[in-house]
Image (cartoon, rainbow, N blue to C red; front, side, top):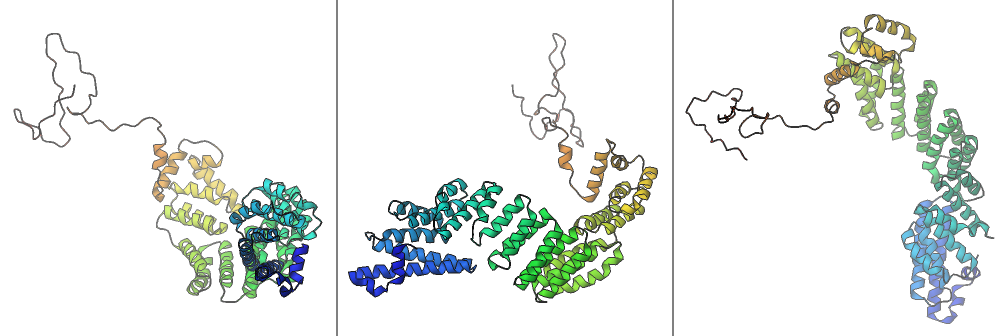
Length: 506
C-alpha cells in the first residue's frame, strides 16, 4: 500500500487536522473516497459487480471533489489516481481518459503509476484497442505488487484474445488470480481445441453468480468442441458440487436436453427436461418451458397423425396456463396444422414440409409425403414427394426408389434424384411454386438482361415503326394510314374526329 494512503487509513482524522479546517476537510474527503474504493474491492471479491461499479463511481466523485477544492495539495496525485481508477472501473472510460492524462505528470510514486497504467489498459480494452492495452500493462507485468501484477496478466490475456492470439492469452490468464480471468481462460482454451482443460476451468467457476451468462455460453461452446457428452458431464458436476439458483439449474438442464435431442438421444433429453421441471418452482417459466419440451419430444418421435392427439390435449392445457404460454401456443399451432386433412396435393405437401422443417419429425413427415404421392399419382407433387420421403424413411429406401424408377422414370424429379440434368426441372418447380402461392416473377424477370421498352402504340402521335416506303418519282408521298383501335367504330368519310390530330413534329 502507498505509505501516504496507509497514513490516511491508520491515523485518526482529528490528529491530521492540525493544519486547520482546510486540512481537516481534505483528509475527511480523501478518507471517504478511500472507504468507497475499499467497499468496491470487497464487492468485486464477492462477485457483486453492480455494487462494485457503484462504489467505484462514488470513490471517483469524492476524489474529484478533493482535486477541485485542494488543487495545490501535495497529495493531489493520490486523489487524481483514485479518480481515474474509479472512473475506469465504474465504466466511465470517456471521463477517465482526461483524468489519466492529467495525473501522469504529477504521479511520481511507482504504485500510483502502475494504478494509472491499469486504468489506461482497462479503458483501452473497452474501446477495442489491444495494442494500447499491451503497452499500458507492459511495466505492470513486472510489478512487485502481486495484486497489480495479477490484474495486469488479466488485461494482457484479454488483449491477446482480441488479437485472436489464444496461445498467449492462455499463458497470461493462467498467471492471473482475478476471478474474471477464469471464463476468459476457458474461452481461450476452447478456441485452441483444449476441451478437457476448459471443462476443468469451468468447474472452478462453480456457482459464482457473477458468471451466470458466461457459464451457459461456455457449456454450449464446450459441447461444440468436446461433444454433448462432455458438456452433460460438466453440467452434472456443477449441479452436484456447486450452489446454483434453481432457475439457472433448470435452464442449464433444458439447454443440455436440447443438445441431446438434436443428437437423437430422446431418452436422455426427456430425462433432462423432467429433471428441470422437478428442480424449479412448478409455476415458473422454466418449468413451463420444460413441459413444452417434453411434448416436443413426443412430436419428434411421431410416425402418424394419430400420435399427435394426446400432444394436442396437453399443449392446450399448457397454453391456457400462465407458464409456458407462448411456447405451448406456438407448438400447438404447428401440430394442429400437421393433423389437418389437406384439401389438395399442394396443401398436403406444405403440411409435410411443416412436419419435416418446423416440427423436426422425420418419420411423420416421411409418412405425410407418401400420402401426398398416393392421393394423386398423376400430380407433379407425386414424384417430388417420393424424393422428399426417401431420406426421411431410410428403412423404405429401396421400395420408394423402385416406384420412382418404374412409375415416374421420365419425371424431372426422378432424373434429378439420380443426378441427371433436366431442362424441365425449373419449369416444374415454377409450376409447383405458383400452386403454393410462391412468387416466381423475380426468376422470370431475370431471364432477359437486355433493355426493356414499352409496347409501341401506332398512330400519328407515336414514333414511326418502319421507314416509309419509297414513292415513284413525281408522285406525292401518302400519309400513313392509322389503323383503328381495337373495338373502336370506323369513322365515316368526311367526318371530323372528336379531337384534332396534333401535327407531327419535324
